Amino acid sequence: MLMPWLLSGLGLVILLFAGDALVKGAVNLSLRLGVPALIVSLTIVAFGTSAPELLISVKAILDNAPGLALGNVVGSNTANILMVLGIPALLATMHTSECSTRKTYNQMIAASVLFIALAFRGVFDWIAGLILLAGLAYMLYDAFGDAKDHRHACRAGAADDDEEPEGADPNMAGWQIALFLILGLIGLPLGASLLVDNATIIAQTYGVSDTVIGLTLVAVGTSLPELATTVMAALRRQADVALGNVIGSNMFNLLAIIGIASLVGPIEVDEAFLRIDLWVMLGASLLLIPFVYLGRDITRLWGVVLSALYGLYLLIILI
Image (tube, rainbow, N blue to C red; front, side, top):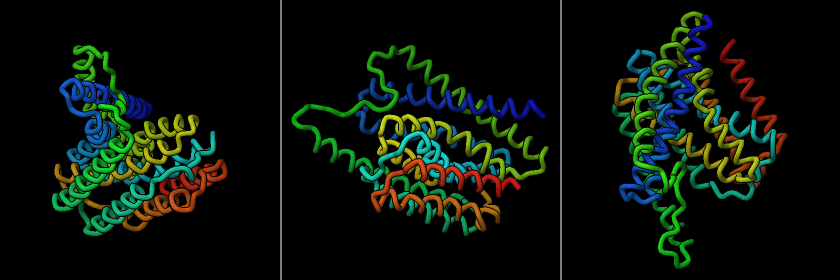
């Protein structure tokens, strides 16, 4: 039974590196073609960093393992709040009292409520997919407007002071851009195939459902990039980056990943999601209220609480 675990880990590693390569290649190609950095940041980078979750969900649907697809998204959103914010807070207090994230937080809660409402239809079909993608389009349009206004307000007479998006390198050669794109486009489906196929074998061997594997092994694995980003943001005292990273990732998971995946094929909603997991996801999201609305910092004590809650949740679904 060691081999499926090793191959699952290999698939996850390939996914993470391929997703990073795709972002770097796409960002630099877009800037080379004259696409504004602002648009690149709001679209290509956002979608690129969600590519592993998207490929996993699509592959799971094609392999008739919808629980893995849904578990990946719901589990990742829960992990993003309890684990991705909890563990960094153990290392350093995140001064979220200095952040202004109310608007994006409200959008995340709205996306969560919409997602849960659609889940009670029993299936995420093409109708639900189009509704979720419409919500994504609104979110991107609103974010683009806010970012554009902010850049204009901060321009201070400069011709163009747009910050370069993540992965941008003005000196990157054309062959390097092509190499990053090729590695990303080949690595993503390969990594998704390895991870989904072997995670399914693990689930069958231990007699657990693909839903549980999606909520645990796959969800934690695909949350590792967010965890790494948040740890560095916490150590650098960039609480706005840490909190914004989590909120943005959760919105994209709900609206983009399941929105696109449900157009590939219907995603049946297991009864366990309606009883427990969706409400845990929403409850975890509501735990951010003190930090978003009441001016609280995420202290080490809060780090202990959030991490302990996530450990308890994993224990409950694995027993």
